[in-house]
Image 1 (cartoon, helix red, strand yellow):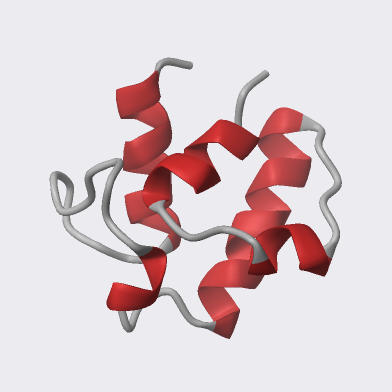
Image 2: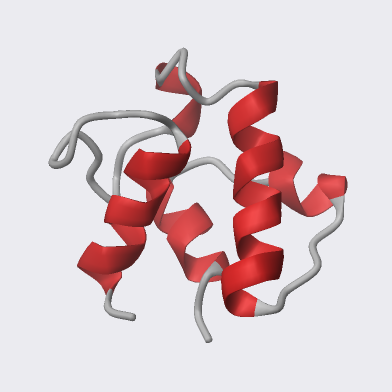
Length: 73
């Protein structure tokens, strides 16, 4: 999965229109980055990437780039 596909996946998780996010965007600037999106993101990491992350790791995410870096296979 390339970087653009991972950004698109983040947009799906956050229920945003395609093309909304870019790597440098701060997650906290989106009201859609809420507790439900965080849970959906963690679930996506587990189901699609077989990664189990701790809540502390999620709290350290600042930008979209940080989030998509967690998706690396």
